[in-house]
Image 1: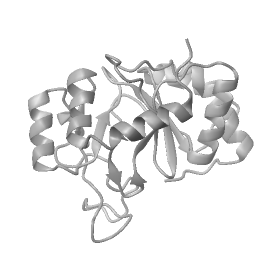
Image 2 (image 1 turned 45 degrees about the horizontal axis):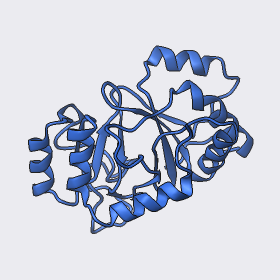
Image 3 (image 1 turned 90 degrees about the horizontal axis):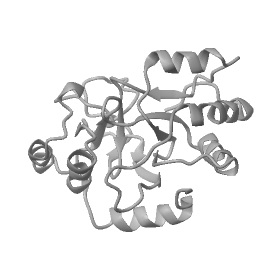
Image 4 (image 1 turned 135 degrees about the vertical axis):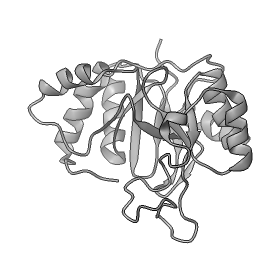
Length: 221
């Protein structure tokens, strides 16, 4: 069965986000879905678009772990509640891989085209995370060897394509980062014990082809 179309799923997401804050979302991810999460460093309120971390050249402002570090990511509800009680506006950072999904991310415009192409050929998608600049398609956990074999078969892999695998991270909704708000472009289906996500093999070909056709090959924030 196909997922609910993007427009309907966005409506459900927006209605739900209006009722819950980061602590409720973080508890759902961790305690219900068993996705390890931790609070992000957050953007610098004094400098729009900049990060509050010590790195003046931070490439993912407000959207990465700092203190605690990524290894502290947990599914423990008590720890998650304590973190967001003390830092109620902190971004929610997912530790990708292992028990949690991985992700394939690309700039927003070609991402919208890639999702439309995936829909046309009947590829079932799970949740898709979006910021104003980039979208991330959640996929099942993959190994570096598996990913390497997929990419080795390509003549060209655009530099703007990013992979969030084991040991990586991704900001989840409803977070505020230096790159803007994080939202669901394709929201998880309501009532799911844990969202279904596709294999990485199902999306890589069309994502690479779309990026190559649109000419977006350089890395973008």
